Image 1 (cartoon, rainbow, N blue to C red):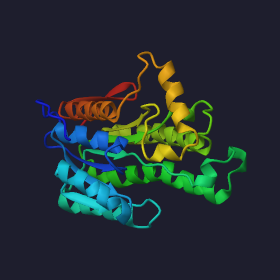
Image 2: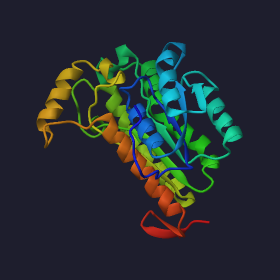
Image 3: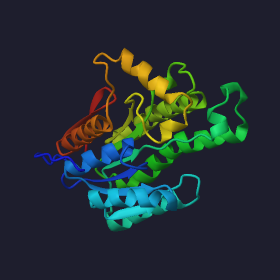
Image 4: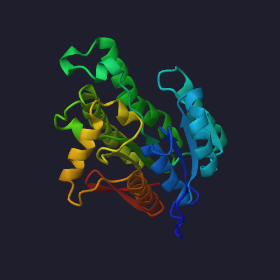
Length: 260
């Protein structure tokens, strides 16, 4: 279940992965790769219903911290970071792989979206990333990496992606601003765009199967990336930051800045 690799590039590093629902989740692909490269992980599950699917995966990851995190429940996110602070005292990376829009909001026209549905979509899909960045900042004492997941629908109109495209556009803008603000502290911020993947969250998009087939037909190799591909990419990006931070300098915003 966890791939075997010889090079433990992230040994000694600690990270939080948010968004594992099952073994088809992008967050699971990331978590498996991080663990394979030697990182110690904290993972979360949405609620009691999801817990039975996530706990076996957390066991496979040997995760010492497994906690509930529903972005719409006040205090749960803060509790996760508080425990990480108490038990680990530091954090090297965070994977934010959550997004949500109420069904009637996602499936309707963007111009028809009700205020409550719009706010819920933006809250879970965008604001939570900024909140996690805020909570992670004091724990990333020697720098670190923040990851979130986006999609091409943020930049072009994709049929049936609807309000989630608006949310992802906001998320990408948030990544740029957070990167500028946290970069001088050696904290890199990435928005990963892996393309369409058959995850549980994607099943809520109308005619998603057609979207997958269309994307596959346009892909150069006539195939799409996998969650394992996404995991490997995030792991190497996290390793790149770790390697740079253990040296004397790190490249940020077009110039070299000394890392204390």
